[in-house]
Length: 400
Image 1 (cartoon, rainbow, N blue to C red):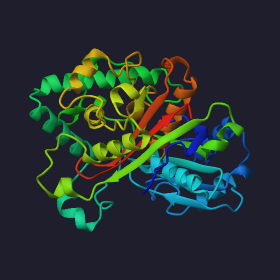
Image 2 (image 1 turned 120 degrees about the vertical axis):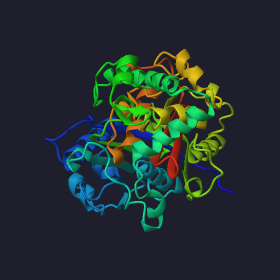
Image 3 (image 1 turned 120 degrees about the horizontal axis):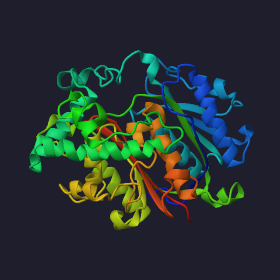
Image 4 (image 1 turned 60 degrees about the horizontal axis):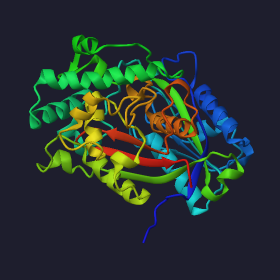
């Protein structure tokens, strides 16, 4: 029976560029910047890396379908390099491949790196995913957009739990305000504007009930992580971060094709979380986990994810939001760096950016946004839409 990956691998270094409208930097510039930071805090040289995995979502505006551009940018010495893509979960997908390679014994030092130059597409939001979903999905997904899909999630949730649109939007506004406050404390975040609940409620509507401040930023950026066997990690540094669980769940299309789903949660998140908790030995996530980084592509996604991760009870995340449970000084801080909402969302890098933040927090190196003495952190990386999605859940700890 499969044992999973618990305590078999560790992270010894991470790197992340500033996210934002980086017109003056190329894809290669971003890749190199993140890589050099990771090398520096891993205390290794480029020649020590045995294999690399690169995540990037959009071929047309980035590095193309192959792994050659990554090898060229970093001048990697004829080692195996693979390019992976899984929509917005691409970053964690590259991390998963690197972790499994090390855990299997295929290599001793692996690099996971992701980047995206989304501002170069010349479009204010994400590009059209219609054709990316495949011709077999054109009947149900031909006009599907990210804001439209998650707006339906919000409306379904409000309806099921008897929230008026006004009350629901007010709760979502608290999520956005929290993320903006945390983003201001992150030197590398894209958006650094302090906002109020009133600002959120008065902002232009993008897809009712979601307004401008309910949507994440579209950014350029890169992030990476270096992985080694757990039993060798302290040969590189005294404070490595250990991988306790790493799970992925991919929808077979049941949500979109059948009537068994009520549209108020993300089934893949529930399944991936259950598997990750089992792998990590987490019995009570609300008590056992110290901080979380979730895929807040929209404020409603963050709200629903609290429940899908079994941290808040079904229909009761509102109470936790209003009590400050997920604030920086709360019992379980969420989006300590501002999240996708404010740090930014260069698709191929986002999952690795979350890991970068957990790495910093568990080591006590998060500066002004540092929380008090964390030991267990979780990342949640979602790709696709609310009705057909890909979700990775990873759990990390700073003690073996």
